[in-house]
Each structure stands twice: as structure tokens, then as C-alpha cells.
Length: 393
Image 1: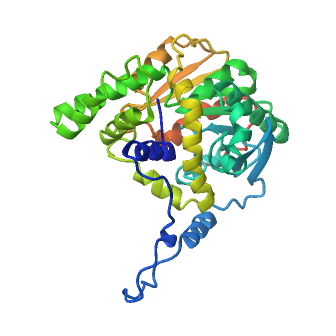
Image 2: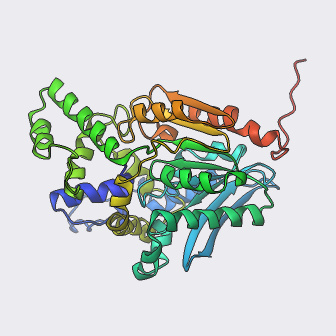
Image 3: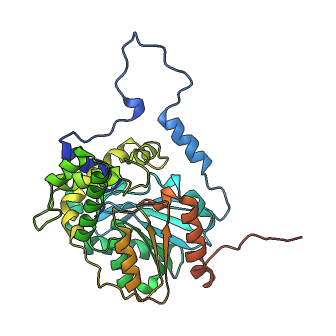
């Protein structure tokens, strides 16, 4: 089970009964007139966004930097397409959540990828820019695993046709692995490989392992507050319907003990990055929280019901990335699942100093494995820009 970024933010706020909203730093209530003179060295959020956007500007002749609104299955859906060279293979990123878009913080880890891939971030149905572009009534009919898998298929088809690519890479993170497995099973010939990052294998088992991890850590540290809150929701997950409030308690303490981002007690670093996103304005950020609540109402039960224990036969290469400390989608289930996989080729990469957010926790090593483990599959097909010219003398 995975509720990340704004989705986690909404869950925890609901669990404590707090209101849900975002406030821009430069929109905070004004200080009284008698307050100290403002520091003129401070710059606005918009200026920070401009600087970040200028720093990552794509200026190469073969480059691409587009935000595109696609009309898919009755609604408008937004994608971002960025890369230094159109001759490189396309990598479609299926974000987590549900409804936790990676587009707003992608600038923190994605820019080096764009030397080797044309990277596509897609705000899924109910998420971010796509949520903002539509009414909830229009989005609701497709808010199912099958409906959103078909959305992903339509996005893939657009990319293949528009950019003249026979195949692309499919990367699913967390909730995105649910759609990724379904899409890879349905259309293996569309993809060079399925890249699994924080794989959801069994939703209820994920919950149980994450809960037991948090409780065992709390007992080892004699954290009486954590022990009391966790034991109050047990047995967990149990046979009864899981509520957002119960999941919020499990999420809070699992995150506190590093099961989401290793060595961190909260997710503030990611929320702070989103606030400065060059790809999202204030209204887009507000839409994340609204879309998270909307999406959880439709997708929480389907996510918990995921069971890929026996979905292990793939007709395309599979690359599994797992964080050694991941208890959001527990690494042990991903490793067991990998062992059962049957595929033309498969590779498991375990990131030693990561939990669930590998691309942000160890971005250099994550890129290294994208380039060494995935990119050659496209290079063998001639789908890559020329490599650097090197000389030894």
C-alpha cells in the first residue's frame, strides 16, 4: 500500500481532523505594519521557479520540452515530455499515489535522465494538472485499475506514433507499478522493458509488513506514543474494511522509522520541493490535494486488493529496483516476486541506502542503473542518440 506526497499529506490531515489546503509562502498573511522591514535579499517563489527553470532549460537542436494536453477516454490528460535528443528512447513514468504526480518534483532528479532518455511525466486521471482540467463527474467513470490502465495504453500509443518509436520504456513507481504490470501484460511488444520501482505485489500484505515493522521499531525504542497508537488499530490490517484514518496511523509511524525515505522521519523534503516546482503553479499544487482525496475514494480498495503473487510470467524484459529499507511497498515482497518471475531477461537492483523513494534518495546510482541496465536494450535496436566521442591518447 502506498500513499505518497500529497496523498500522504491528505491522509494524515484527515486522520487528525485538520483542514486540507496549501498556502504559498509568498501568500502568507501579511505582517502588521509595525513589523520589521522585510529582508530585501529574499526572493519570491516565482523568481525561484524562474531560476530553476532557466537552469534546466533544454537548448539542444534535437531537444524536446513540451507540455501537452491529450484528450483520452473522455477527459483531458496532461503530459510533460523532456529530453536533450529526440533520437533517444522514450521513458514513460507512471507515478505513485494514487494521485501523487511526479511532475512537480521531477526537476530534483530527472534532469540527468534527459541526457539519455526522452522522459514523459503523466498526470494520471484524478491527479494534479489532469484533475484540475476536468470535473470529478467526468473523471469518475474511468477511476478503476482497468480504466486507468487503458488511459496509460492510450498515452503510450500517442508517444509511439507522435515520436515515431516502435517501442518505449515503461517505468512504474509504487501505485504506478499496478498499472505498469497490467499494461506490460497486455502489450509486451510496445516496450523495451518494464522497470519496476517500489513494486506493489500484494496490497494487504504490504500493510501488514509495514505495520509490523513500525510496531517492532517502536517497541525497540520504547516509543510509548507510537506503541499505543499502533496497537489501538490492531489487529492490522485484519479482516475489516481499512479506513483512511487507520492507514494514516500506520503510514505516520512507518514513515517516522524510515520506511518511506531512509533516515528521514517525514516527507517534508518532497513537499518543499513541490512548492518550488518550475512545472507547477499554485493552482496545480492545490489540485494535488483535492485530487488525492477524490482518487482515494475510488482507488483505495482496489489498491488494497492487488495480488500479483502469481502474475509472474512476462513476455518482455523486467528490471526491478528495490530499496533495502522500503516498508511502504516492502522490499522483501519485491525480492520474492522477482525470484518467481519468468521473463526473457530480468535483473534485480537493491539500493542499499534507500527506502521507497530511490530516485530521490540515491539519484546518481538510480541513473547509473537506468543507463547500464535499461538503455542498452534500446541501443541494440538503434533507438538512441550517438554516444560521446572518446580518445585515450
